[in-house]
Length: 211
Image (cartoon, rainbow, N blue to C red; front, side, top):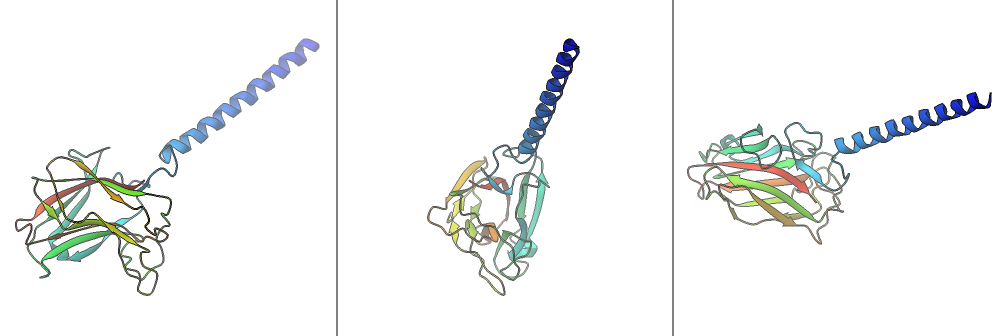
C-alpha cells in the first residue's frame, strides 16, 4: 500500500511539473510573438502587415499624385522580408512642387481625431533608408509636428534636416532627448522638393522604430 501511494505521489508530481513546463512554454511563445523584450522598440514599420506596425502612411501632402508606395517590397530589405518603396515622379501633379507622407495614428489624423501614443519612455527614433540610385535629396525626415484641429495635435517634433541618400542602406537616428512625447499622432514623415529631384526618385525605408 505504501509503495502504491509513493508511486501515486510521484505521478502527481510529474503531472504538475509537466503542466508548469507547458505554461512556461506558452508564456515564452507569447513573449516571442511580441518581439521578445516587450517595450524595447515601438515600431512605425517593421514588416508588411505586422501587428507591430503602429502608424499608417496615410497623410499624403503636396503633390500627392506624384507618389506611389509599396509597403511590401521584397527586393533587398534592410532587415526581415519586406521594406517600403516610395516612388516620387516630381511631375507637380497638384502644382505644389513638393511631396511628402506622414505616418499617422489613426489613419488620416490631422489633429481632428482622437488617437496617438504616449512615447515618453523612448529616447531616439531610428530608421533605415536608401535611394534607388544615390544622390536623392530629402528635405527632411521627422516625427511629430501635426497641429491640433478639433482634437489634440502632436506634443512635439524633431527632424533630421536635409538628407542626401546613398544607394546603400544607412541607419539614421533622430535624437528625442528633452522632447515632449506624451502625445504623438504623426509617428514619422518625409518631404522632398521637385526642384531638388527633377527626375523624381525611389526611396526605400525599413525598420522605423522608437528606441
